[in-house]
Structure formats: C-alpha cells, structure tokens
Image 1 (spheres, rainbow, N blue to C red):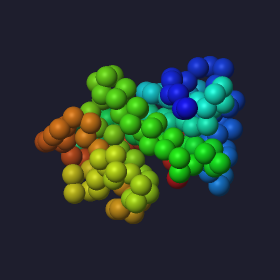
Image 2: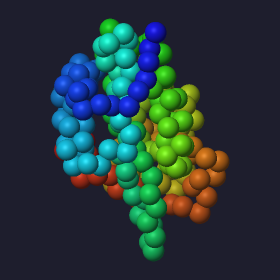
Image 3: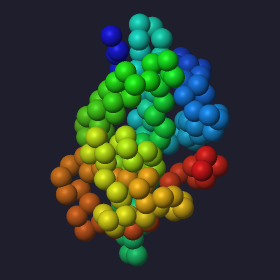
Image 4: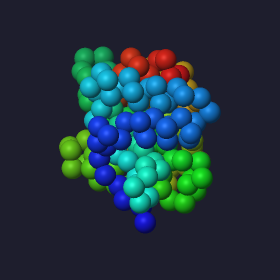
Length: 170
C-alpha cells in the first residue's frame, strides 16, 4: 500500500535517488536540490511503499506577468517514480493528493511542461489558448495548465516566469 506525506529533512537523499533513477540525467535531482536550498518549495510530497520512498512530486512558485500586473501561480516539476514502480498509479496518486493540498494551501493555478498524453487526465489543458505563454521555448502541446478552482484564470493572461533554477534544467 502506498502512503503519501510531506517531505521530511531525512528524506532528501532518498528523494534525490528517486529523481536520479526516474530520469535520463540528474538535471531534475539537481533542480530539486537547488529549489529546496533556495527556500522556494511550495509543496514537496513523497510516496512511500513500506518505509521506502518510491515517488516524489514538487511544486514551486511561478509568476504570470501581464502588461500591468503580476499573478501568482505554481508549477509542478518534477514528478518522479522509481522505474520499477512506474505505471502502477503512484504518480497519479501523488498528483491527485497534491492537488488537494494545493487547494487547501490556497493555490488556484498549476502550470507545467510535460507529456501531453499523460497530464490531461488530471485536468491539464493547453496553456496557450488560456492566454499563457512560457518564458521557455517549448512545444505548445507540452505547455499545460490546470485551474484548481473553476475559472481561476478569468481575466488573467501573460508570460509565466519560473524560478531562475529552471533555466539550467531546460
């Protein structure tokens, strides 16, 4: 059975390992460490199987910059599951639980750059038609957003600016 809880300081080594194993390079693991060290983590959750961390999800703040206004949102990046445990619902469980926590914390909008075949099942839609552009050059189909509260983006559009640490991971 999988349990999900907030990251603890004693989890850092295991979280790094999960991120290193889940991706082809260590860029995501380095990104997580840098964001944590900078103190800009909005939400960091781990999935445990027994006492072992088998998954991790991280959210950090982003800014939607319009001509005369700035709006706060968050980004989901990264989500990682140990390769042997992928395709077993752990990632989906992390996302669903995380969205509940994000709502509880008062967050309304989540953006991400990700696989267009995977994320729509969680409510993600293309961000460009919603009036959001990314500071990074990414394919339109990979640039997505979900409104955690209905109509959260009404009247909001602009360029999404990430934490500077993301530039090294892109």
